[in-house]
Length: 636
Image (cartoon, rainbow, N blue to C red; front, side, top):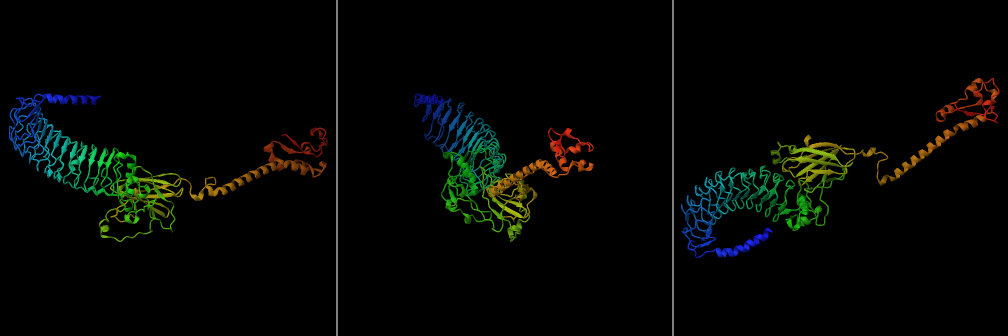
């Protein structure tokens, strides 16, 4: 609805402007045009060398562009209390004297662009305390005098682009507490003083100058939101390029710097950065930008990208963004990938050579689908392969090899110069953590500081020591196919080609952890042994069944043994009257005692229950049975 009203107002504006124009009105200056009752006075392209008389007092906007004013002398403007905008661009002005703007104290906008000014004398803008916009671009100003803008307490925008400035001193912009936007593009600035920039600055343009590094003054600008540094001869960006106080930076333009290298920590403090432009540089690689959580726009065209494992994170990031928002990354090397877009290359072809080896010797072939790696010596058994943990921001090439029992190096002059340094770089590793993953895997993670993007992970079990190369700034790997139930000592060593090889890692960069499960030589019978042991499992099951059957047979035999004893006793044939008193007492044998707990019965004979002197014991016998010597069960 608001757009409709705007269109209606525009359509009404055209006839009103035509009616309000008073070209022949006597109150309008000669060779000028007045609009809306002399609020807008246009005297451009009138070949004026001085201000025409008769400027209405109600004038709000005065256009004096494209004239021939050589000097703006003191009192150039009469008392114009209502005027707020003056255009003096392209009028051949080479000097402005103090007091020239004495009569226009309420001025908000002043355009002095495209003139021949060489300096801004002190006191020129002394009474313009309400000025907000000052345009001085496209002049010949080579030096800013101290205090030249000190009276502009309300100034918000200052444009000094396309001049001849060589430096920006401490006092050049003194007295501008409300300055928000400063344009210094296309000058010859080689130095910016550490105190030259106001703390209120929101946008700064320093593109097309002669800066060889990011000025220190920028690093201490906490309110800076947009920074333009394109077109400066800055070849390298490090962790010191952008300070800790740039917490508000949202847009950073670094196009055409001839950049050759960006270290890992160059952008880590710019956590709120949304747009980063690196077009038309000499970059071959780019460290992971995982710390830039708010980054949504990344321009990368016009570089010499080397498509290897260091750019896998970039390929992953580009896969996530929309195609129309994706900045093309065209590979310049290796030769087999030249001319291809990074986002279209198969992940397996983005490989890296091991540390210290020439990348040209390990370039992946065009038909290869597997990463290049160093094959371990065949005479040394390895516990297993090692692979990296899958991440969305970074990945790496992993190679394994066996460390020699003793390593010797021919000491060069460079190594002699660095002997005082720790070759293990233990101070760069702050912590190492290991957790188990299954029975045969360990996940190793670490925290580090510095610009290292390659690490050596050594893992040792007994006498077997293996090495894992991690390239690309990844800080976590997974060691697979290790021995179950085995203790491993894992050490993480940052790599630096200028130092000797690390022989004894410090305790802070190592940690000992045991894999889960039991060792392979003590596996229980019931543990899952795989398809190759199915026959053994079947045999064990058959043996268990056989043992169960044997136990049942023995139990049955024990239960039936008393009946067999009775049969044996019947076959004895010894007459009852021949047994002595002692023999009668021994009828309770061991077999009877063994069955007492089970049946709660005792096994005996009729003779054992009756006194020997009593011959007739038929009272205890069942009816119709002769019990002279027949045994029976008696419940106790």
